[in-house]
Length: 491
Ligand code: G3H
Image (tube, rainbow, N blue to C red):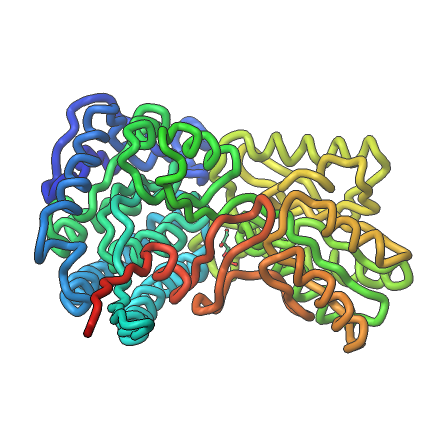
């Protein structure tokens, strides 16, 4: 039971003696009186006061003057991040263990999340060296010499999602820091304890006030930060509702830059000439890795009617091979779900689909307990069903048969979301036609492959309501900075 009372403000780990938030695992354990949901520990429920102190520290650290964080040389800032990275690597086992217990991510994927985050930091350092070489240039025009500089934006508020509480948080936090911004960081709601092993490393690696870490309910903490008008960048990965609620509080929205990763409902489109085995394998990984709890997951699969029976047969056979269990068990991919109420929500989606004519076509599909839900493959799904329209963010796979590809195209064109999609076909002409059409609709088109964010050096964004700004390595460095000019007449 990890009782965490520390939070980080102005380079000091302060101790909170107020109320705490209980952190529960989605994993149930056997106790003398039966199966019990494991309580992992607790984190501070800070108030507006402590949050505003954190903000004050970030504002002061930004405004300290020459030689302070925002004006420090790039090499010096990189050295601070390298120090942090080295210390963080020493905490791998602890963080990986907490990823498994807190969000139910299996061992392999938890290790991958940690290692990928370290690689991302390394790539970001290299990316900054390159950007710095390109960005600091001189331009001479009309008797004026202009020195172009890339500079930070100010104070960033960084908040990540529960499904990648380490990795996706760091994809905004690290570029924000390394570009010279100062930061207030509030960890995700689940996957919150896993930041504790890193608190000392943050404290010891950065100058006071550069990174401040707060805990608590959003309404008691970050609301006041946004309302202060002193947040210059909102880096948020979560829902549109969450992002809009925060943005709305800022008194001068034109002074706020937003870097947002939001809702998505990525479709897979399996055309009649697809290699069915490839499509099945990619759609399994795309829809069910980490139980479908990825913003990039395939959340609706359109399959041409002429091949849908074969696709379904092969798809459900593969689902039956997936092993359910606890995150640390060998070869397990289906694990407990951390969000309270999620199982009931998924059951409701299945029931609604059933009421509109779809069935579960896989054996054991939809079997559940308090925090576990065995994948339900639904067929035939149509646009009247909730599961066609809502982002399930869980192990329910809706399969939509189509005769005319216009049905799939219309779905993409009319959707409020535009993160990614996957096209499965062996015909280069069909692929080319669809790519041209969809290039104006989504941020990434995957051909004969699932949707995904990586490689992390690729731009990661979305159209419509799926994102604001672009992440990755080099894009994120740009997202957390601005080019300014120092101009002088030279004759
Ligand atoms: O949840 C959203 C993540 O950006 C997905 O990342 O495609 O690497 O799993 P991923």
